[in-house]
Length: 265
Image (tube, rainbow, N blue to C red):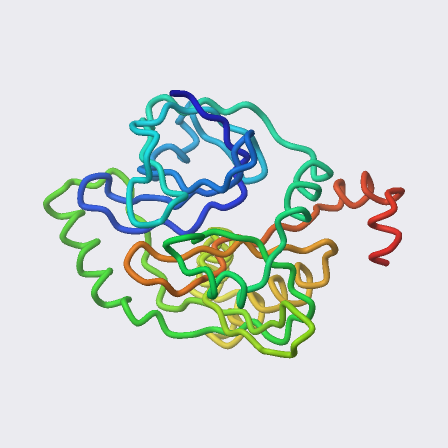
């Protein structure tokens, strides 16, 4: 069976013994269902791949099975070799789909991950975006070294020594959430800033964190409309931010005359 998906989340690549690195991809199908698909090998996103696709675009693929592939109802195993990019979606389309599905973390927690493990929240107030040590850094670095040594990995992916988390409120109740952000964009931003530090362009790690924070908290955090796609890990029921969806400058210009944008500003 073929299925079409509007890709709304590309999380940071994770180590895999079979595929070297896997990418968590999630979004909304053309029938309006939340979907998490795998395996998506990291190699699909190489420039040489003819199946490379971006967040906020439509893709088509074949399912291995129509039934959930793990304990989370939205998960499906697909045939990665059948992925076909279909082109970008307009932000108006994305905005309408997400606005209709907004929930809160309290509502998701009440349902439980076995009922709903993907969702979208609209942060009412973003309080902070701060670094945290990657507790699995040593373990993942050792695994990566072994894979490169014995698995002859084609491309080495640096394991980040730090990850980042958002502190935000998503409802009027005033509860503050602290949530790990696994958006691929954050990982790449950190790696780029860390490269600048190694080249002497940034003074130290503190400047690296300031640059990342400036981008994710000040620049992106001020965008409207702003959505957090949240999802659970396969091993733990805890929700994390797997994607930050926001309009580009071009999107904002296209949205400028809509009633929603006039109300937002």
